[in-house]
Amino acid sequence: MKKGLIVLSIVAITILISGCAKESVYCTADAKQCPDGSYVGRDPENNCEFYPCPELPPATQPPPGVQYCDATTKCPEGMECYKFENMDKPICYSGAPCDWCPTGKCVLLESYPPQVICQ
Image 1 (cartoon, rainbow, N blue to C red):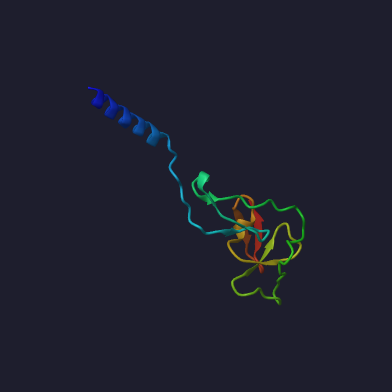
Image 2 (spheres, rainbow, N blue to C red):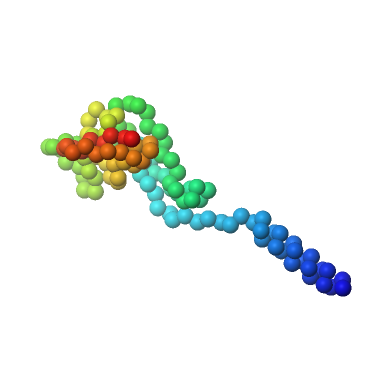
């Protein structure tokens, strides 16, 4: 009888402990480039969505090191020329242009360079 009670207690404690343990979440190790040039990874606490990018100031100048572009000044390979609504001049940008926007949503106006209007 004592032996059965001990086994039952061990099983009950094991079930309680395993039920309380939080399951680990592992996200892929990719990164997203933010409009300010920094990178963010994925958040395991938020269904592996990307961490939010830092807010851009409402300035009209891009972060340091950003290259301007236009019809005569082309972007380096792997980058595209976009005119973002809060910038005075078009800049070279790699990645999806809507990622520049705080909501991640935008409309691209047909022009050269394409104008990015955040939504």
